[in-house]
Length: 357
Image (cartoon, one colour):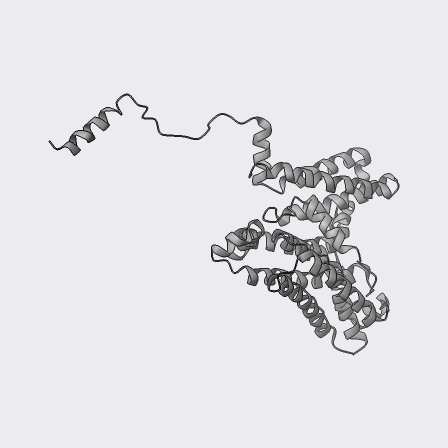
């Protein structure tokens, strides 16, 4: 036998008595807290859903039937409809690790364009609505190009766009409000999303139905389409996503353009909500949408969260606002509690992210 064969046999003899068990990773049982942490990491909407359920339970105990009526519960939906729609737009941007401070201004400008094109230029209301939607999409497209192509920070780009759109809104409208009576008489389609449907004491508006439809649609798109996976991948690590073949710039532009279009739909819904076209309405929608996103468990660092969590976050704000109002407390308590929730949500997000670290 050759020296090579003998060496091989000696090597095999050296393995006699060694462990033959397949290597495995750490198998010790996790603590209940660790399992809970992993469950929340796998289901980002879990925390806001728990908070929403708890707030409904607490206000239900305090207020009883005064709070748990079909009208009161659907009133919460009506109050958060506009914020919920803008929140969908904000969620898409935040999932890419960006932020859009211009969403509220784009929403209002789109509504002003719809009203002014109808009453100043005499265009058919349907055409004016399409023009308003186009303006919103164009503003989002400009944001997307500046962020994706020019590589400018999203915060700075959208801060500048917020100021530009806000000023354009006041300059173009001359701070003129179009009255509800005029819209009802001449262009009722502008108030379409404010029309109500009564089902057994529960009052729904078409704006609420639009909000729910958008949430379900984009929840499906983000979780079951290639585009949705690309959005998450860009938010998690844009360089790795690009190496994997994702067209990062194109996806980012599409996200911001889509966000602008959704904001325009929110502007149309806003007209239905307040009845009139006002250049001063909805000025805090950007802050309110970010609040819903943060409380809803969408990470401001991008790549983690869900649209369902955002709508739970918006509903939490709505429940606190209505509940505290029915109790008769000072409105400032609402802001205090919402501020505490925002800080707590960010702290919980950091704690959950440690699982993936």
